Image (tube, rainbow, N blue to C red; front, side):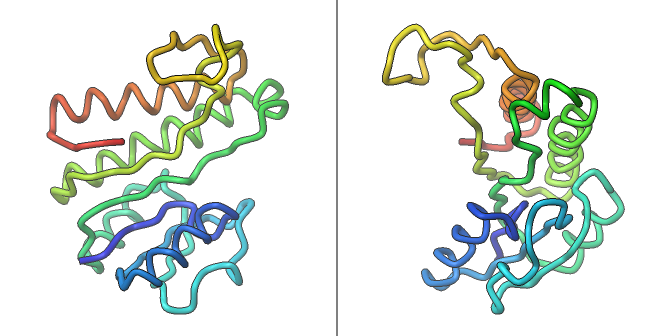
Length: 164
């Protein structure tokens, strides 16, 4: 069984892939290389260049690989840019996550680890930020990440997809 790492050619994702492989895990990486770099992908990882918004591409990956869990780092993540290009951020981040969850549901994959952001809290009520504080994003980026979290919550209710 393999761990699918979305955004595994990016800075954080590629480091996670190296750790997983060091722990003896089989790893599959998807990255559209918009900001990631193919040379950052561990040579022992199975790499699929492609876009998570393409359901047929995802179906092909899930059919070819024995995936039992997903780690989701794939997103546009620049706060300033998100304010100038909100539709691009909703398309890539929120819609991309919707398609991933659809593929997971279709293929019976029940576990996802999601890389969110403190930007979901906006201007926090207290520091350090804890997960019980109210969410009030002040950027499109934060809003998309919050929407992604909420989508996972409802997919857990409906399909039993566990998320953290």
